[in-house]
Amino acid sequence: MQACLLHQVEYTSRTTGFERYDVPYVALPETDLAHVDTRTTFLGRDVQAPVLIGAMTGGMELGATINRNLAIAAQRLGLGLMLGSQRVMVEHPAALDSFKVRHHAPDVLLIGNLGLAQLNRGYTSIHARRVVEAVGADALAFHTNPLQEAVQAGGDGDFAGLVDRLAQLTAEVPFPVMLKEVGHGLGAAAAERLIGVPLAALDVAGAGGTSWARVEQYVAYGEVRNPQLAEWGIPTAQALQEVQRVLPTTPLVASGGIRTGVDAAKALALGASMVAVALPLLEPATRSVDAVVSWLENFLWELRVTMHCSGAARLADLRVEYRNRPAPAA
Image (cartoon, rainbow, N blue to C red; front, side, top):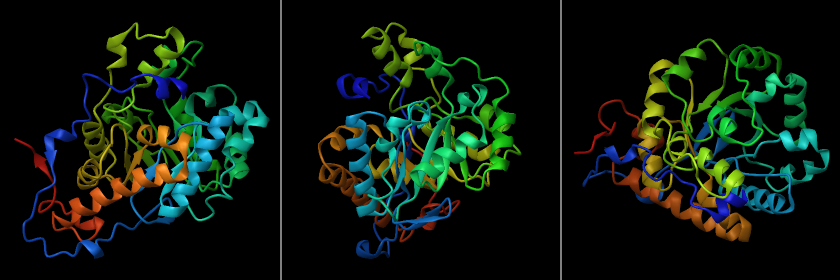
């Protein structure tokens, strides 16, 4: 977390790919901005907009403050919230309080979080149930991050057999399970290996936002020693479309470099059910709830304006296969 606050941790040469697309502008939209409807349902919970506050932190005093501010902001705006990796609270129970935000956000979609590689370290459905129940979450996300772990000092390098373990665990728990990358992208090759796994959703978490291969080099060395690894990944727009082609009925979250409401609208038009935002909210969350709410309110306003000016009165209108699907920009 400190590396993300102190260093430039975003990709420098690789973009999300959304700049290649445009939501069609309609001068006669036949919509009323005041009545543009961004409400939707995700993982069985109603949200006021298709936006998740993405996974960030936990397990330290500042992490507790950040999670508290994010949770209260999510409650105020009716958005979803994904917690940071809860492995630390499994292995260090004193960290639990930094993740316990349900009393701050009783009505929000709350998603727990564990590392997929932990399933090769003895974690089972018992651990999955424990982390969900301990924080009152509605669902659990497993993050897959082989590049981050490979670059991380002492990281987990064993990702063998994890698809089968994930499939088994998903069948053993009573809550929705989703899989996410951390910012280097889920693509077609990964999606093909997930065919038949009963996941409730996937977060493609593509390249173009935070590079965790860059973050881990700052943590380990104070500098980036392997820049090509730091710039590696599947751009978010590409990842979204690749996974959708392979798993067309699986709800998808687009994250990785989503920075504006226009980005969100493009992702939704390309088939995402939700978008997730993390890094832009990290520094505001160290300051106050109001700082987080202010950033998100501007983001949501941009989304509504983009919908209105493209003739989309509701989210489904953005997703109409031909009339509103964006074409590559010239």
